[in-house]
Image 1 (spheres, rainbow, N blue to C red):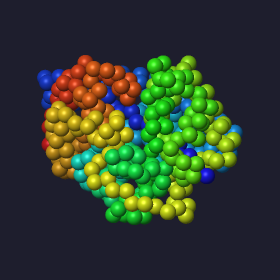
Image 2: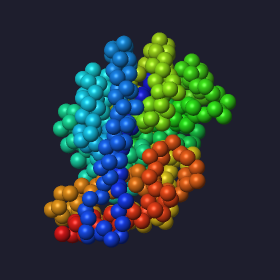
Image 3: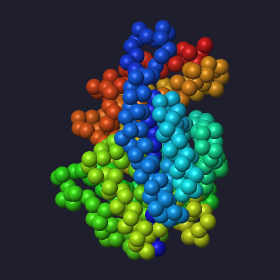
Image 4: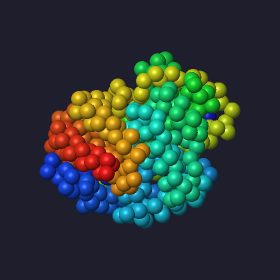
Length: 395
C-alpha cells in the first residue's frame, strides 16, 4: 500500500514599500499597504478560496478517505485577517472535517533556522500562539520555511515537542536510499522525517503548462502512470507530495485546467486500492520501521542543488542576513512592539529571494510577484528599512 501525503505551503510576506535613505529616522512606515492588500485579495480570489472550496468538496465526496495538510505562515494569517477574513473561515471549515492537519511553521516564513536556535524558537513560539488563537490547533508536525532542514534543526524541533518533520528527499543526502521510506533524526530518533518526492512534485510545479515538455499536456491519467511507473517500487510506503498552494490558481490559473487536474487526480487515487491518503501526524500511529537520515548541512526544496543558496548564496544576501540577526539582542531588550514585529517580518525568505542572483535573468515560478528591477535594488531598499528598524529597536 502506497500512502500519499498531500501538503501545501502557504506564505505571503509583508512586502516593503520603496524606502529611501532619507526616510531613515524620519518615516517608520515600511510596508506597502496597497500591494499587500491587492495581492492578498488577488490570491484569495484566484487560489485560496476556490482551492479551499475544491478541497472541501473532495473531502465531502470521500469522507475520511481524502486527507491533506497545510502550513500557513503567521504573516499570511495576519494578511487574511486584515484583508480577506473569508479565507480564514474557509480554512476553519476544512479543519472541522478532521481530514485536514495544520502543521507548525515559522511566524513570518523566516529563515531564522539558518542562523540559530533562539531566533528560530521565537518564530515557532509566536506561530504556535497564533495557530491556537486562530484555529484552536496545537501542531505536532512541522514544515519549516522552504522545507529547510538539517540534523541540528531537527534536534531543535524535537526539543520544541515536534515529532514529524516534512523536508526534501535530496539525492546528495540520501544517496542510494529512496525518499519514500520513513526516516528519523540521528540525535532525536523519535522525530520522524517525511521526505518530499520532488520529481513528482516538479512535474506539476514546473512542467504542468510547459509546451516544450515531451509529456505535455499533463493529465491525471498520465500522472497516475508516473506514480505507477516510478522507480520507487510498488511497495513504497510513503509518497510525499508538497507544493506551494499558489500553484493552484495563481502560478497556473483556472483556464490552464489546474483545478480539474487535481480533482481528477484525487478521484483516481481514491479509486485505486494501491493508494491511501494520510496526514503527517498519522505516521506516529503506524508501526513502520525508520532509518536514520544524516543531513549535516541544511537542505531545502530549492533547485537541483537542494541547498540554501537561493536565500544566502551571494554577498548581498549574506550581508543582509548578518546585519539582520545582529539585532537579535536589541529585539530581546526592546519594548517597541512595532519595531519588534518589523524585525520579525524582515526575516521572511521572500526578501532574501528578491536579492538572489541565482535566478536573475530568467523567470522563475516562485518570483511571480517580483517588485525590484535587480537584486541590488532589493538589497538597498531592504538595508534602508533594516537601518531604521535598528534605530527604533534601540529607542
